[in-house]
Each structure stands twice: as C-alpha cells, then as structure tokens.
Image (cartoon, rainbow, N blue to C red):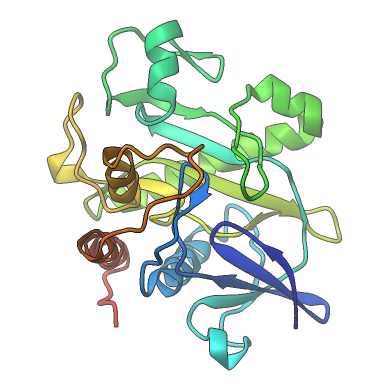
Amino acid sequence: MELIHQGKVRDVYADGDDLVLVASNRVSVFDVVLPTEIPGKGALLTALSLWWFERLADIVPNHVISAEDVPAEFAGRAVRVKRLDMVKVEAVVRGYLTGSVLHDYRATGTVNGVPLPAGLEDGSRLPEPVYTPTTKADVGEHDEPETFEQTAARLGPDLAGRIRDLTLEVYRRGAEIALAKGIIIADTKLEFGLDEDGVLTLADEVLTSDSSRFWDAAGWKPGQTQPSFDKQFVRDWAKSTGWRPDDAEAPEIPDDIVEATRERYIEAYRLLTGRRWQ
C-alpha cells in the first residue's frame, strides 16, 4: 500500500483499485492537530460511522467496500473504500445555534447569509435545519464559511444543490434516530465525492463525535453550556489554556482531559448503538 494523503485525523492509502481509509487517534481543534492522541478514538469513529452508513444507505450511497478486508495492523480502525473524486466542500448543517456561527448571528441576525429569527440564544433550536457550507481546507489551513450561492458558483448549481439536499436529509434522519436515544445532534459536517459513474457518494465519516456536536438531550437548555459527548470538551480545554490556533505550538493534552474525552466518545457510541464498547 502507498500513503497518498494524510488528513487531520485520517490517513489514506492506495491499494490497487481501492483506497484504505485509516482513522488515527489524533484529535484536531480549530483545524489544528494537537500533539496528544486519544487512545481508541480511531476505532470508535470507524465503528460509529459504519453503524450510521447502514442506517443511511437508502438515502445516499456510501464509499464502503469492506471493514474486514484491511491490513491486520489497521484492523478495527480502517475501511476499504471506493476511489472517489472528492468534492471540495464541507457540507455542514445546523439544527441548533452554537459554535462559530453564534458571533455572526449576534452581529447580523444571519448565518452564512441565511436570516434567522431574533432572540435566539446559544443552544437554541432552529425552526428548521440550516445548511452552512464551508471550504475544504488542506492540513494547516482553516475552513472558511461560504454561502450556498458561493458554493454553487464554485461547483455548479446542480451539484451544490444535490449536496445541500442530501446533507439536510441525512441530518434529519440522524437527528431523529439520535434523539430517540437521548442525544441531540446539534450540527454535523459531511463529505461527498463522485464515483466513476458520476454518482454522488457519502464519504469519510458520518455523524461521529468528531464531525458532530452531540448533546445530552436530558440536560439541554438554551443559554448555557450544553453537556456533550464530543470533542467540544477538548476545544473548551484548549481555549482555557490561553492557546490560540495561530500560535506556533499546540499544547499537550493532560491525562485527565484525555480520559474524560475518551469516556465521552465511548458513551456516545453506547447510547446510539446500544452496544457496549470493548
């Protein structure tokens, strides 16, 4: 196999006509990879993505060929997948107002050019999920928000529209399933590619604790920090140190933060799948 791309979290190997996607234990916040890994994280992300791919297959095809036909050293955290022509957009959808868009909303009443009702708080549920795409940045660079019209100008209106519609449909299905299990999916990002026949295909990961905000539905209350099962815990810790993404060196994560983060990922997996993590 040949390593052809190393992302923030995933490494991509070429293996004949296929690719092998390997999820590492690396963790990134604000588009920066931190120097400390979260043990078992890659396997957790892989298992949860596979669980979701099965439940979304009637909405959109995915890139998975096999989770077993992978090199032994990557077993449990790798998937054999189709080669795709990846579309250069992070397809982000938000069902709740929080995170990076909160400042824009407070300043303009809009998110990525989409008007929202007045009076919303951090954590408020939106009347309808909102599609808020960003650019797909290379490692070391930052994703930048763009309006749907800007995405359409780059990709063409047909492709941009299909990605938007599928992203919203995947989110609605996932949010409904998760809420029944006690988890709010506040937002998520998806990635898509085109296969050799031009079929739009869901790729990378889907509805995981890395790509989504998972909140405890029982503890949700707008206007406060939400109890979560995702890497927001690491983001909050990183901000508390005074570190900023443009600093020369990212901080090492203390052992207690590593373990607390790992426990959150495991709990999200247990709640969603009903399976105990081994």
